[in-house]
Picture (cartoon, helix red, strand yellow):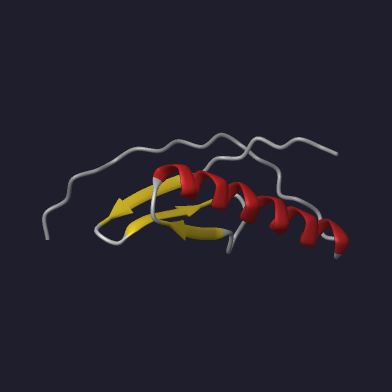
Length: 74
């Protein structure tokens, strides 16, 4: 088995947590607690990678990723 290190974005709102993996388009999940969302996104990533490999698809190359927050007025 291969090991992958991928960036994950976790957001919290009044309904719980939402997580996505920007390197794997369409790979996202939700959960009620931070611990749950971490497990859920790990499962989602594993399933996403397994599906791509079984389909003969290549995995994207992971480059440099920067995450920041910006304030805007609208």
